[in-house]
Length: 298
Image (cartoon, rainbow, N blue to C red; front, side):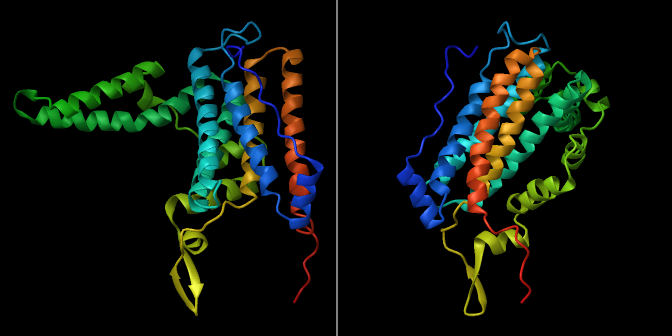
């Protein structure tokens, strides 16, 4: 189904390695390996060929959207691995996590809706800016003598035309397409509590937009009663290596449930995803022991 590509082997840890993590209370070495594994799983499932006999018949553009989003998740996860392996760039991995979160939500929502309208709204959402740019360029051209077109404008117009043609939509269709729901609405539509939106999207936005909480967390620190610039020493938080792979596993599960008709095909794959989820949750359970005890008032 994937050009003879095989599912990667899951990580294995010796009793000695596990004991060392438990004694130090540092589970990052184990979480790091599971994070990598989920990143590889994501691209593995994205590479399932649409022509595979087990895959149901559905529009190619939908396949391209979903596999493109999964590829994005996988590559951003691999980027996080490269950034975080030496204990730096925690501020950047947090930013990329926000991007992964939004892509996963879109995969799950599109698979949940499964309609041509939902996919068209996704496509149009990205192309509305292209249409606006198209209008601006055409307006500038019409204001010139003999409608002279600049080389850079010609290049931009060709790019916009290609984006719309590949999506199979005209500028008029894009403008008339209903707006894509925001992330909060998608999460609600999927049946999740608003807490998921607040933690994944709103808090994640701090890292994207450079808000005051973001500055305090990653770019400033207190020294002698004053705030000074923080050095380049931000770790990736262990929770990032828990929540991101769990979310990506959910997106993969939604995808395979969307592209396959037969439960006989889906169940073994979902069983694999659930077993990986349990491994990560088990580590998280040990790592967060005591976090959910009642707090003692001081």
